Image (tube, rainbow, N blue to C red; front, side, top):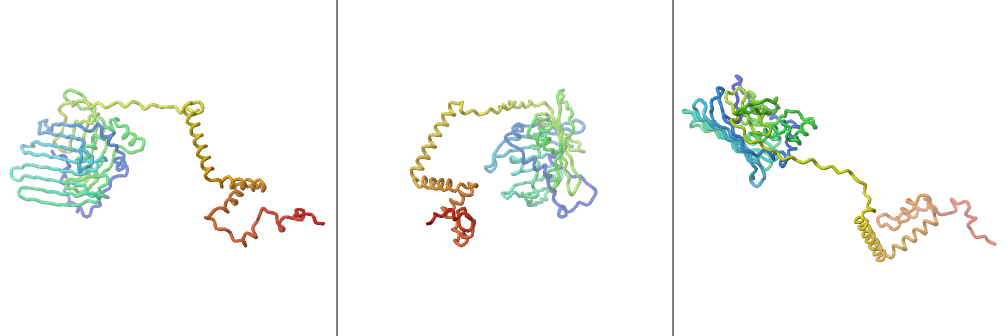
Length: 398
């Protein structure tokens, strides 16, 4: 009845975790998480699921409950995920509980995971605590009690290796999100998957039962129908496979109603199944009205009385401002008059170059050229070296 994966006996000597390179989440999977908009994508995920746990013979063994609600954790807006599964298998009480604080992009802020099996002679109790640090790394503490034996362990995982990490708590939110996507209810995610070319399966990273980082593959399953209380429901499936780097892979299959309610959950190979016993009230979504489209109209401000009045007011305001400036700087009129007179006398072909050369003399940032260089430069003024008609310009002598 565990909510997490349980490793099987592979028949081989387990690999040393020190020799295993930590896996990385696929770039498109990280992009998917970063594209989540909480105000839009989590709007219809905040509800409660209640299922019953049954054996392969149909006998009820226990209950399974999941709730997701908005909250604050250490002053940060986030979501509280609370999952609880308890019952008895072959008369042995067992159960799992998860309390997780999940951030806006499904990053785990804090998670407490408790599993127990109350065997008569040797009860087993396992607690795992995951806490995210300010630098993005994660501290993982475990306390395993078996009978009178208590084992404690602690490790820190760097933020680089935890990019795209999905804990058991955030996994429950991600499943609901995927359901809305595959059911076509979430348009943003639908565009992200279809238009951006992202496939229906994504690789993220998670912990296996021994808190070793390993690939977590999410894959879409075929739609099917499920009968609950004589009501036939169309359900959408999601498969999660934890490919442990030191043991056999473990696969979970979950099915959901179109509105995100969980209807069936099973670990492949396990005789225990979690099923919906009654049809919950359907979550009705707000119909968003289509955005109105407005054709671009040409702006005829001359015909608009208000705009034309504003134009006239602005025109008079600028004229008054310019006149005021001219009044406070009388040298401006003399400067422009000298330039215009000089320009009309010389009539240069390149007015821009002529103006640049004329006003350069007033600049304090341009150094004055040496007179020796200027004596050999080209000049528009007539002189004896370049003007062959210099004699004609001289006054006649008697």
